[in-house]
Image (cartoon, rainbow, N blue to C red; front, side, top):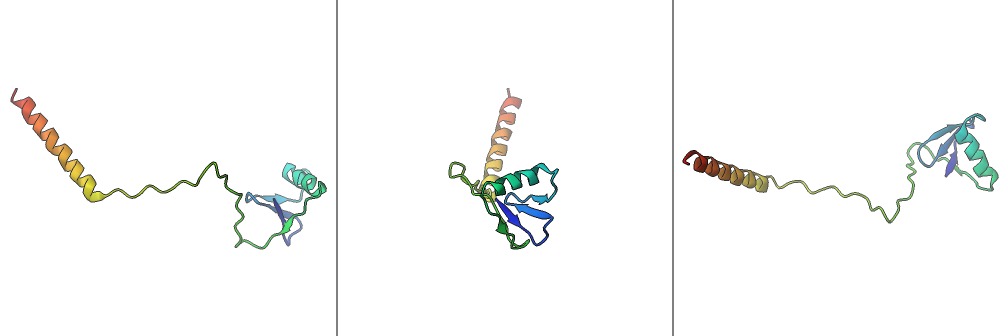
Length: 94
């Protein structure tokens, strides 16, 4: 949940927020309540560490769609263009 930094005026929260040690700050108040409930913050190891909240198994990560097959798309466009030309010709001769 929380990590203590080498700067006693800043606390790092696992969602990426930096919380100032200000008694009027509601996030700092929440940290104090959390700590007073018996929880212990971890030491902050530095900016290279990425802390991410766990993902829910009910919401799997989104997958990138495969890139379109340009050759197939081009063939489809040519087919549509040929059909349109045939329809235009048919309409012009009526």
